[in-house]
Amino acid sequence: MGHNQGPTMERGQKWRAFQWQKARAAAMPKAMPLMVVKMHVARARALGLDYPTYAAVRKASGRDIMGLLFSSNALRIMDARAPQMPVARADVLGAVSGAKRLALIHAPVAPETAATCNPVLDGVAPAPRFTNSWAEMRHHLSGFITAQRLVSDQVLIIGDTALERDWSAAARAAGYLEAGRFFGQDHRAV
Image 1 (cartoon, one colour):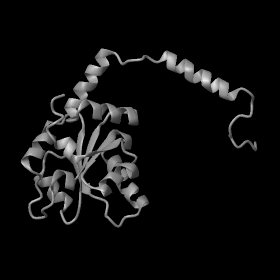
Image 2 (cartoon, one colour):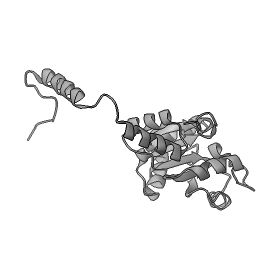
Image 3 (cartoon, one colour):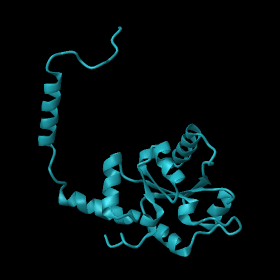
């Protein structure tokens, strides 16, 4: 009763913390086993990512990527009358396996129409509005991700604008990737 759970006032606390960190570093392997690296390379390839990007996202979040969340800008879905992504982008998404392919669609394109015209997508919803507050944007994004039965830090957001980059922080997602890096051909050699 009455304790504020602050830092310990015992003598030697910094020394014990130093010793614990030193022991932990000694117990951890210096390099990952080759079999684990091979599994990660295969997983990166299945997601359509280069290995360094996959490894960085996995290291930052501590979890595997189970969902790729694209903006309609990243998918080039912009025409409300014919909201179909370019064939090359649909082909790249079609090759992704082991993760949900999700999209948030900016107005004036209707999400239902975009979903119908792009069957490669597993889930589609309206994008947060430009006028939404940070809290509204966070609520919108986390609601969509939760509805897909995913955890936020298992989702990599792929977008094209600064606003979409903010989605990553608002949703507490695994990370953000520029659409040009995902759809570019330079990383397919992995």
